Image (cartoon, rainbow, N blue to C red; front, side, top):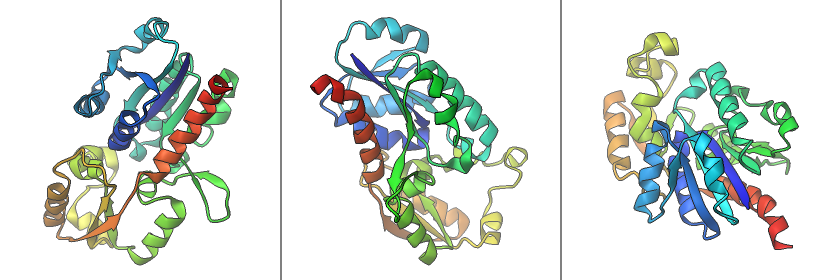
Length: 264
């Protein structure tokens, strides 16, 4: 029995759906019983998958029923990147529980303000490998992706190149477009320390919004929501080509590392 754990931000819901729905080697997908996982559950079911939904404490017993490859997923709320201490606390809590059930954990997070920069060292005692989404940089070194937008645009170096010519652009992936009000706690100035408003973004120099096309179609209102955002903020809409390459490579590498002993 080999088990992969996924802990990540809900913003990667579409990418995780795509990965799991298209992996023929998965015997069982476990979704932890939590409201943050409801969207993922619905999308997986729409793809014909039949995830097992259980609270953490019931998963271990059920795992004994399978001797094949299984995946356990626990997603966390969007917008935690604006509160690094909370992001670290929630992620460490879930990783601590997950590490007792799985053979390796793939974190669907980027650098996110360095909140998780020491997580591999801090959990080294568990002997459960933990890896964030990674990208090969221009100097050929492997580094965590900077954030979810870098992941959607094909990696850090490509992201930096795009920023040079689009410094006035706010980026929206499908999940960001549909959930930006929730993610940025619109109306909660005290939490953010600022008001997420047209005036604030214009003060920061934003004039455009980019629709990052990841070629995933789980959010049917993507284009409509981007247009609504542009209308509300008075921005011009542009479209940028995205991909799932970074998440696919990170998933494949972790999956191969865990399954390799089974195929000797």
